[in-house]
Image (tube, rainbow, N blue to C red; front, side, top):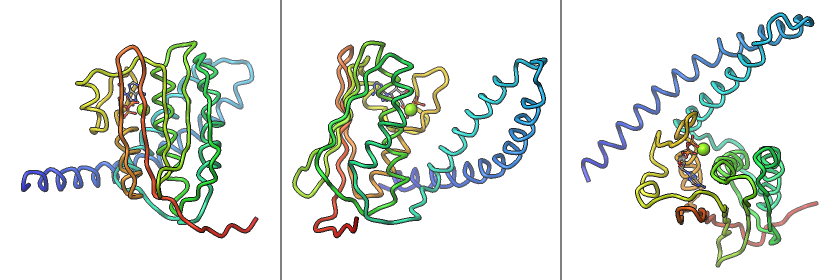
Length: 230
Ligand code: ADP
Ligand code: MG
């Protein structure tokens, strides 16, 4: 127990340190990006063909930094009632381009009208990370299915893919900070998602079979008798 607490405290200090570094680094990065974009506009003759590459790597650095910031301090700023299926279909639409690029079919079945009261953007972030992983794990020709159902007083969201799956060992490590099997992975996405969902009194569980695919189940408490003015 004591060890657990010490571990949590250590992680917290680490998180705060990471957040302050991330925060400080973000400003100069934004300046560099701005000037590079200007250079790109001026470079009509394409004398500097590597600018798009530099910009794309800068974009990656930005994503990593915002993941870190979110990890250290998930901010629940705007609490509101909203439709869960709406948020899910927004995320599916957003990630459809990535799916198409990878030759993966992204399907969704989001019929029940369920409402949540929480920070919509944080929830979006959690779904983006999980669905992105599913797409990234699935080879061309495969499918990722996002579905929504009601289970008691909870919304049940499943993200199922026909991808490479995970071994027992990999499954036991998923969600731990910095665990990644990807060349350019950060190992932050799942940890951030689990943290967000758990701070919303929700739960995340993973089921997987090597070569068959993975199913991520997320449970979130819904708002009952919500009055929505349309
Ligand atoms: P990253 O995507 O940067 O590697 P994540 O925390 O999002 O970090 O994921 C950690 C690891 O968990 C991934 O590198 C991958 O090995 C594994 N993983 C996550 N989701 C899936 C999935 N749907 N199918 C197979 N492996 C997965
Ligand atoms: Mg990821």
